[in-house]
Length: 202
Image 1: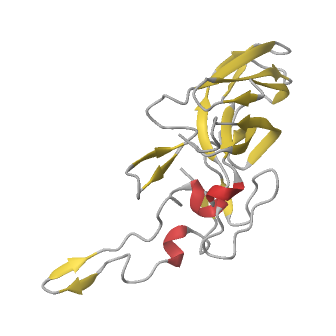
Image 2 (image 1 turned 180 degrees about the vertical axis):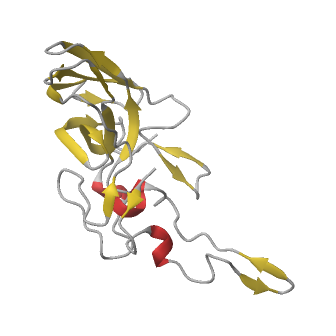
């Protein structure tokens, strides 16, 4: 869930067509105009024009971003490594990093991996593609590996092509972001490039 500040949320920017709906013939009809900008993507995409995000994903309209959590301890995420650097869009991408408990008590952190598609797709700025819960003692470090599988049911590397009636993997540079919420992305890597032989997405 994303918790916006009062008066700055998605529901504060809708009209009667979205809720409660308008009469079309003899039926009350609700129109969904969000498209793919659902949930945190609405804020990331600055659909209202008043919620531009920073490079780290922070948003002035959001009090508690998607994925946000509270702990009695503190954590640091570091040493991001993404492999492979170049792919044909069918091979899994491994995202590895360290999570350290920098506090004085045991606790759990939930690192999250987000992906930005090539700019040519005009897609929302990022999408969640994986996460893990890591329990750590004070001072303990663990290496975490999250695999982004193109064949997964959530189609992490693809977009829907309505004309072709199929999923399409764009060609170009994919950026990988890691943090502990959609609004706190502390690590990024823009080195993974999808290259499909023949120059067309799958």
